[in-house]
Each structure stands twice: as structure tokens, then as C-alpha cells.
Image 1 (cartoon, rainbow, N blue to C red):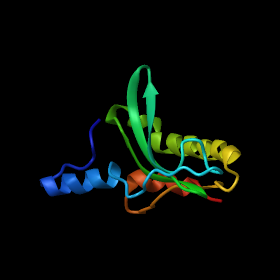
Image 2: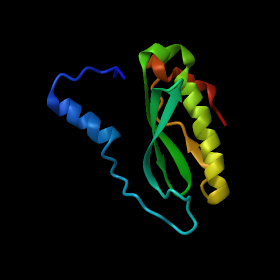
Image 3: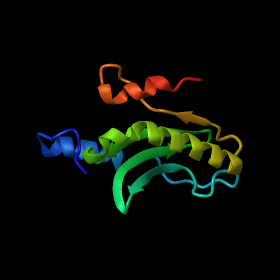
Image 4: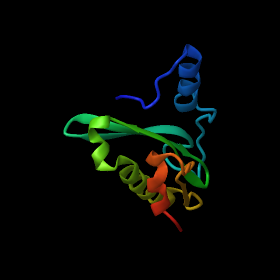
Length: 125
């Protein structure tokens, strides 16, 4: 996988790793929550035996929050941001069957000036 951003310093790489890998959310299980519990998770997207994308999500008591998606640049034409959003919506609905109060999906931040985020405009209530 190739990351968009090239890090100029080890500190930048450390901050990026902390954002995606070292979640402040601690894993937690609740009797009325989903089987896997609450916390941060990575979802892998595979195609023909190759990993093409990884999505980072937070599962919270009332919602699934999309944190970040990175993908292999060879597969940019597949609109993997849109695909992952649809999969995460379906996943939220599946989790709601286990935990009825878990019924919201947050698409994450939207920055209009970032072309890679413009697909998010298509998703409204």
C-alpha cells in the first residue's frame, strides 16, 4: 500500500501511527453490545487474493464511526471510499440486530477542499 502523505520527520510518522493504530478507545464488552465489543477495528478488503484497502472504524454503543480508509493506488478506479461506506452501513445494520441501540453510522470528517472526500456528499439522510 502507498500512503498519500510522505512524512518529512519521524514525529509526523509517529503522529500518523498514533491516529490510525493506537486508538484511545479501550476494548470493552457489554452484555447488550455486539459480540466483538466496542473499540477500534480494521476492516480488510480483498480482491483476487490481494488486499486492496483497509478501513479503520470505531464501534461505539450507539454508532459505527468511519475513521479512515487507505487503499492500493492500482485500485483507485474502483471507488473504494464509496464501496467501504456501503459495506460499513450494511455492517452497522448487522450489528443493530445484536444491539438495537447501535443504530447510527457516521461517515467521518468531510473536507470540501479534499477531492478524495467529495464522494461523501452523495450520502445524506
